[in-house]
Image (tube, rainbow, N blue to C red; front, top):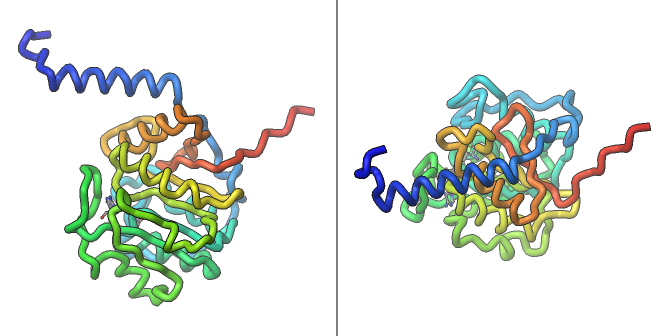
Length: 245
Ligand SMILES: C[S@@+](CC[C@H](N)C(=O)[O-])C[C@H]1O[C@@H](n2cnc3c(N)ncnc32)[C@H](O)[C@@H]1O
């Protein structure tokens, strides 16, 4: 290594990398199977594809994040869903289609209020949620235009508990932690929080959320990784596996 590489910035980055490596060894996410959360043979409605931004339909085709989410939602029929990160509203629309009794609160910052690094899209108010509106689901949805850093869900939920929370806004570690902790106090006892773009490879944009999940485990939250997906899952109480006979 050259002496010239010992700059303060390089040393800070090196120490961040070492800390991440330690976190990943000490707090690696245990695996959960879809079958532990919902019957894997749950039938789901045909997907709405406009502006879909989830594998296998978008970005990567080697795994499926869309189907497990919809199976989980369809099987559990949540009454109240909160999604942080609406984008064009594709997931919102598909959730409306699969969970007709659900009320969905979905949050996205208009482009002029955006902060953070891994933000995926910078959208206008007209663009945010356009897919669920075009498909006629606006009456089922409360659109909240806010940066999640400044979000207070309490006045929107007015005492309702959240059955399904989805963290899919800014994927920087501090934002994912913020978003998890904004949702958690409102979660129903049997509710579930899903965190998207979370994978033990920590490749590229998967780094921020996985590190956030490691930190959540360090804080004592039993966050697990849904095998073969880019989802992490947290619920207040995991079922205790049956003892062998
Ligand atoms: C990955 S996309 C969401 C995809 C959407 N959940 C879906 O599956 O159709 C992330 C969205 O979060 C929004 N976003 C990023 N940072 C945000 C923040 N701090 N507060 C609110 N929204 C944010 C972006 O504008 C973008 O539309």
